[in-house]
Length: 323
Image 1 (cartoon, rainbow, N blue to C red):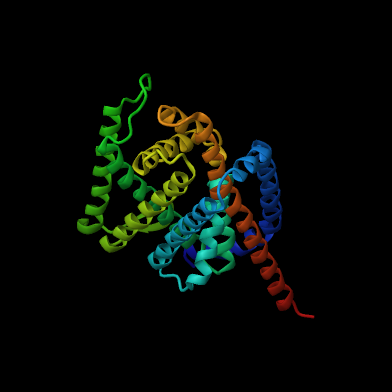
Image 2 (tube, one colour):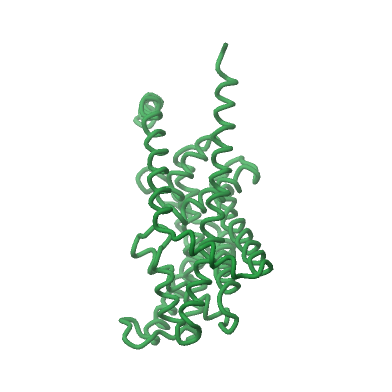
């Protein structure tokens, strides 16, 4: 028996022993994170802000949000093709939607990693393939970001206020570097002779150029839709490319601070960069509406979807249990 087979032989006993404690710990973590998230949000301010918007505006923002979540869920469809996993799109899209909603609100560890592992394992996907799907989803998201941010930053549409450590000229330089990184990835997918690497026992294969271009298109489209939601809710005198650029800057700040949902970071960056074009009150009102529509509402929908998945799985276990 090889070492790999021996390892496989030990896995059922290990997971059977720790599955229940880990499941309980997982749900306790969700309860704690939901509580912390709820305490950070001024719900009266959210409701008051939303009540000031026209219904048509809110519906447009909600429609764009749905499109964005569906596009993000399609990242996992690319992952399914990448790992050659025989799953239907009806099985994949709910996983992507639920994971994205939890990821935005409760950090990548809960949404991007723990939630995907739990949901995909129920679909019979191996841990190795789950890791590959997760990795490709992350790559799609940030590859699209790099390409879009590189183009926007290079254009000079976003002007940084005086006193910032990063000048507007330096931001354009960052844009050039991001575009070069994106082009390098595409070139590697097209011309690289070596197509696979092994990282901690997981084989990573370089995607084809066609798949890489699809990653670029979907990743950039998702970021563009996020900006469109914000643009719909902010004062009408602001231009869409400027809103997109500020969102791309604030997203990096949110990643660096590691704050769930980037609470406070998004608002601070938008107000700092756009307060010379719109009042702080109108900017903050639009961003609160954005959080309610793009973060909170999908999280509530995803929670219902997740509870439905758990209930269905429990029913299947009861059905399989011999009487």
